[in-house]
Length: 218
Image (cartoon, rainbow, N blue to C red; front, side, top):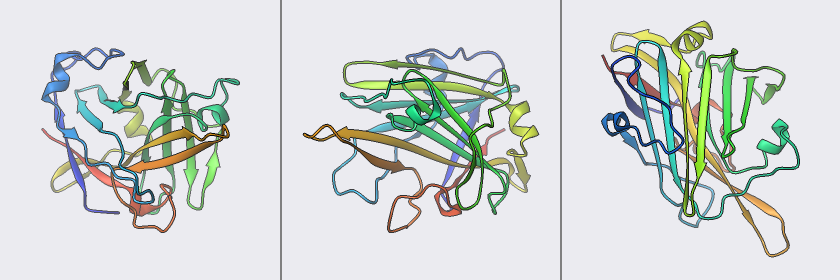
């Protein structure tokens, strides 16, 4: 795991309502994470602003992404279609061995591809985040899109994703984006974007080196 840390600020309980535009005033309290990179591509990436907050019941997150050409695969609502769409992603792991880790990949509809994984890309695509413990909303504008959501702390605790050390509560997490660009022949090519650079020759988020730490402030 890398040493990058993000501070998750605490807010009053039930003060934040999830909206499609991520325009609730509470988001202004959050630290803004903008240090995203695509180490495997030479072209610059468009700005991404990620924010997170928490209260006594929920962990909240939002992505504001500059993108005037969002691609969404709509042949069906399968996880395979989501995997071929522009999306944002959160991976959370239970331990440093990634045994297991849990993946949330969310497109702009918003549809969720949620699955449980083990090392070496051993994916259980039949797994779903606990029912009624997650909510997401999104909007696509002419030059950007936003995805916001909340996850119950109860589900994070039951999955052993919230941990404690001498500095307090923390979570080991990866924050990512997949951007598809259509070439002149009509083929889509992904650009893989990450908060933590895993220092790999090819894109790979499913390794310990792509995770950082979220620290929950008191």
